Amino acid sequence: MSNGQMKTDVILIGAGVMSATLGSLLKELAPEWKIKVFEKLGNSGEESSNEWNNAGTGHAALCELNYTSENPDGSIDAGKAIKINEQFQLSRQFWSYLVNSNLIRRPQDFIMPMPHMSYVHGEENVKFLKKRYEALSNNPLFQDMAFSNDPEKLKDWMPLIMEGRTSNEPVAATKIDSGTDVNFGALTRLLLGHLQNNNADINYRHSVEDLKQTSDGSWEVKVHDIANDNIEYHTASFVFIGAGGKSLHLLQKSGIPEGKHVGGFPVSGLFMACNNPDVVEQHQAKVYGKAKVGAPPMSVPHLDTRYIDNKKTLLFGPFAGFSPKFLKTGSMFDLITSVKSDNLTTMLAAGAKNIPLTRYLIKQLMLSKKQRMEELREFIPNAKNEDWELVTAGQRVQVIKDTEASGKGTLQFGTEVVSADDGSIAALLGASPGASTAVHVMLDVLEKCFPQKMKEWEPKIKEMIPSYGVSLAENPELFRDIHTSTAQALHLDEHVSDFWDVEEKVLEHV
Image (cartoon, rainbow, N blue to C red; front, side):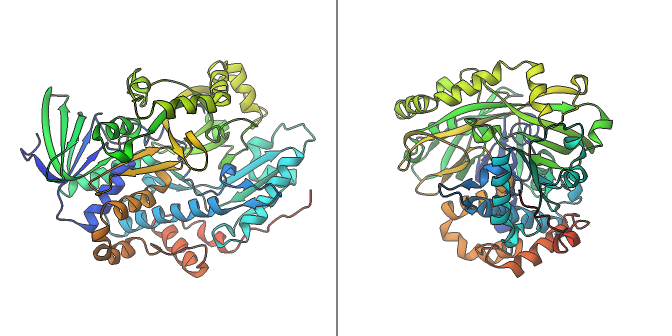
C-alpha cells in the first residue's frame, strides 16, 4: 500500500478519461477529499482512452451523420446532434478552466484545430446531406457550416478524396473549420498527473477483484497488488467504476439492483493507418461518410487526420472485429462470464434481435486486405496497398438492456451511467460519444450521487463551466462568448475569427 491508509473518501476504478475527469472535478469541488485510483495496467489511458484506440474526433456532431436521423416525412431530426454538441462544449469549458488555472500547461499536447466534414455520394445521399445542412446551419452551434456539391469546391476542401475520382455520380460535403482532433490518451495522462500532484493516490498494477457494501453504507474494495502479489482491502464512502469493458463485471459484483438485467456485447475495431508521409500531408480534416444500409452506427466510415506523439497521422476505418474479450488486455471468457441468471433472457433476446449485426461482424472479420483497400478507395480512389497497414483499435462493450420502447434485449449505442439509489456507487457503461462528453457524463454522476452537495458546489461548477444548466443553442450570445474564450484558452483561436466570418456558403441546387 502506498501510504498504509486503508480508508479514503473516493475510490476511482480504472485510470481512463472518465475517472480522470471525475477525479479532476472532485479535486476542485471538494479539495479536502482523499481520492484513490486503482488501475490494472502500468499507466493511465492505456485502454479505450488511448489515442490509438479511438478516433479522437471530439464528437460534437459536426460531421457524424448518424446523429441526425431522417423522419418518415423526410425532415431531419437535429435534436441529438444539438444535444451532443452542447455536451462537447462543456468539455471544452472545463479543459479551458484547467488551462487558465495552470493545472494543465500545454493544451496543444491534447487538442488541435481540425476541420470536420461530412461527405456523401449518390443522389439520395446528396439530398439528405443538403437537408441536414439546412436543419443544422440555422442553429447557433452549427452556423459556420458550409455546404457544396460543386466538385471543384470539394477539391479545395479535400484534395486527396477528390483526386482520381472518375465517376459522374453526384457528390456533396459539408465543412466546419472549428472542429478539433483530441488526443484523449494524452488528456488522460495530463489529468491523472494533475491529480497525483495534488495528493491523489494513484495505484498502477492494482486490479480490483471484488467489492461489497458494508453495514454503514460505505464500500469495501478488494484489490490485487499485482507487482507484489498482495491482496489489499480499501474502504470508501463513494466508488466510481470507470474500468471500460471491466465495468460490467464489477457492477455485477456490487450486487446493486440497478445493475440487474444489464448485459454487454463486445465489438473490436480495426483501422487502416497510412505510413506514407507524402500522402498524409495531402489531407487535413476529419471526413465522415454514411454507414451502408444495414450496418450499425459504430461502422460509419471516416478518414481522420490525427496528431499522435506530435506526429501527423492518417487513419481510415473503422472495420469491425469481434473478440469475446471486454478489454484488449481482457480474458477470452469475459463475454461468457458476464451472462448471469438475471440477464440471461436479456442477452438471449439481444441475440435474436441482432442477427443482422452478427452477420455484419462475421463478414467484417472475413475481409481480406484487398477488400479493405477497396472500401478505402471509395474515399481515396488512388490509395496504394503499400501505403496502408492494419492497426487494431480498442474494444468497446455495447450495453444491452430491457427498455420500454424496444422491449427485451435492446442493444444501446451510447454511454450510460448506472448508479445505486443511495448514490454510493456509480458505473460507466457503453461507448461513443464517450470521452468527448466526459465532463457532461461526470456532472451527471455528481448530480445522481451527491444531490445534497450540488447547491454548495454550483457556484464553483459555474466558474469552471459557465454554461452549466443553460442551453447554448437557445443562448447564442453566451455560446459566442464561450466558443471564443475556449478557442483562445485551448490555442484553437487561429480559426476562431473564421467562425464568425463564415466562408461563403455554397448552396447550389442538386
